[in-house]
Length: 186
Image (cartoon, rainbow, N blue to C red; front, side, top):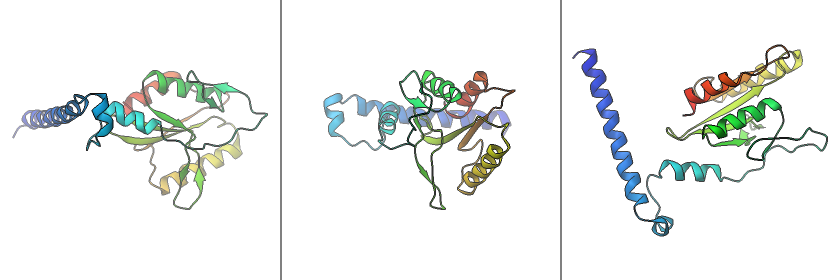
């Protein structure tokens, strides 16, 4: 078989899978809102899946009284101006996320990644860390230690871990954030 034929066959297979998924989704939503509440579908439509994922209740890290009050367009409190930019971009692009959602590592230690994001299309979760003080040597050491502990638990950059960095000379770039969202979360 030629390479073009193989690509065409793969595209057709993907299209048929998507059609089947849409048929299942449509058969559920066609029941009407009242019946949908009574049913437990095998496959949730993307919007319902994202809505349920987003509604999970959790306790993030606590804020100290003396911390600066920074909020996103959704009214969430975050710890840095760069996190405001990331959260607003995620929101603007329709990516469900949780801020500082607790994650238990295999060591038993609980960490609070800046963002836990959902790629609704693939239903995969990504953690997103923003490292904002990379000019501070102690902070750098902690950052590399944190990245190592994530790797030991299977969180690999570009697979299920996204990170951004900045220092006093190079602030976070909103275009980079947009590109990362497009690449991994849409």
